[in-house]
Image (cartoon, rainbow, N blue to C red; front, side, top):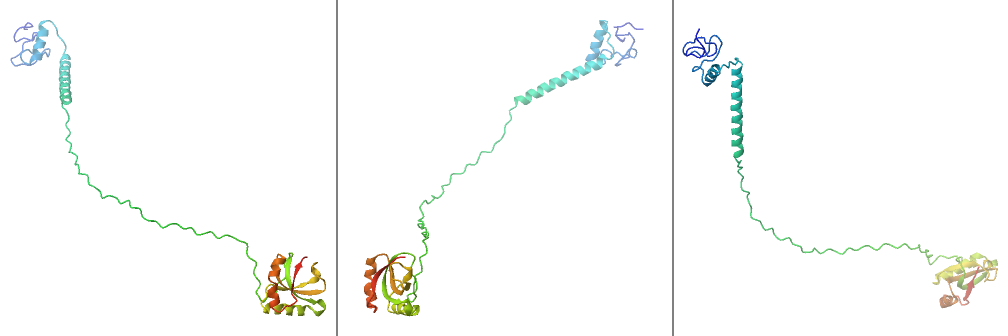
Length: 225
């Protein structure tokens, strides 16, 4: 058997190996000069008496690949960070301002608002009796023009006929009173009257109309209940 460290002999076990042989057939050691730089390292270890097992080689290969991968990652990250990203932007299109036509602010004449006057509620006026109808004396005191006094014995019909004659002669507010119902009149008569006045003066102002209608004995008389 060849001694370890001699040319043509395995540095670990001393077994001879053929030219261009990569590994020792006895112990599996990569042979120096045949398997590249790792084989030279292995031969150096063998010359110093170091004989690591076969597990060391996969570990060394893994560490080498890991170091190469880390170096490549560092180089790529540095290259990408050093580059500035340029973004092409399209210049904004500016349109010249267009002048809008002036807005007319002329005031439009408005028609004045007229509010219709609200109808005022007034008490309904007492309807005036027709000129050819007789009236009754109202429930208040006043003055009147006595046209004629007819005794009750002659009957009411004669008093009504006289009253209608007064209407036909143009007198207004003509009626017939029963004198027994009023303290200012003598009882026992039907009194034919014309007009209802609030004062003696007002009644006297219309006395001439009664006289002109043919009642020559007409006079003013107060009527009290």
